Length: 426
Ligand code: S3P
Image (cartoon, rainbow, N blue to C red; front, side, top):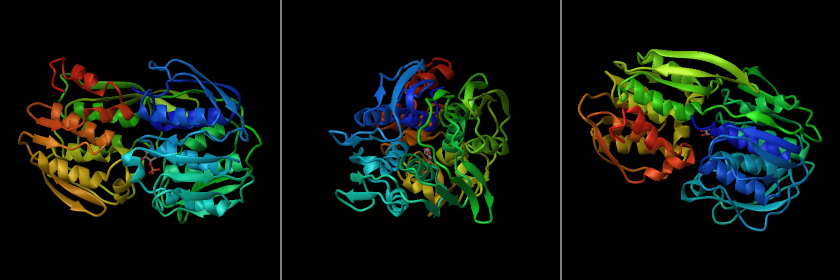
């Protein structure tokens, strides 16, 4: 599988902030990694060419106080994680930098990240519209300590605050309604930076009380991305492959794995084998075969643990008996596209009956062939969800832009073709 996108971004950032030479392997070779690496290079980190085959990449970090003013805008392309985490890093750095991105990224909310950072003392100038990129960051150090309550569970917001605390030498506490993915906490703990997390009556709390003056180089093997694996597992569950599919060396962080529980509830036999715990993240293989699927309900309790896989739950729902209902997922409207509207419109375009809610959708399963044209909306996960559905016989779906997959899963189309038995389905 391609390297995990979330862990690739975090390891590139932390390696750039370390004192000395880091060794990273298994990195995602994709558009989002290239965008984040490019921005970090522009800020002074010495990062070689990203390897296409997951082999080792050496990074010479500049230290927590060593970032420099870039000479050009930092263009984060399509990467929400890259842009938001860097806003945090830059807030605590004595640097002036303007961050921008592609049309999709420029339409996504950023004030959810800048608001807490302003409370810490950083300054942001919006170029065109408040809350939207481009924005110029004027960081400062030291930043003020912060205790922040976030109204949505967001690992990007939480991580931006933790990274601001790290570069800005501030103690930070973040409370969110439910636990979001905890990769940043695990990586920091792996580097000897104490980040505590526990349940509280308001939800989940993470605290970094005593930020260090420096961090040691990062030695990290990025596992495969469970969010990318989910497309292949879905293809297998839908009967697109002659044999069950096994994905190996995939990250199995429990804050990311609820898609497997949902697949299971829909009737799929999901078998998981733990291989190892690579640098603080559990890693293993997952096998799924073709299944008679049942509709399922997914609600707010589960949503943060499968937020990126919800388009796939909707795709599976289109092929399940009965109705699949997703609620408590309004955050989907702020992803690379408005994923609720993208799934609703596109499923309807291929003949599926769907009801739209502000915070989700209900999908009526059908056995009719799914035929029609869909829009990718500059969103890799929408493209791949329909890529998988369309490659299942006898469906026939035309997608307007197949290249969007390069953001997180270059080679997606040939993998699907291969899994389908090499008959050119995709
Ligand atoms: C990510 C967090 C999630 C997720 C995104 C990656 C991360 O976003 O949807 O693809 O790496 O921190 P939110 O934190 O906005 O929920």
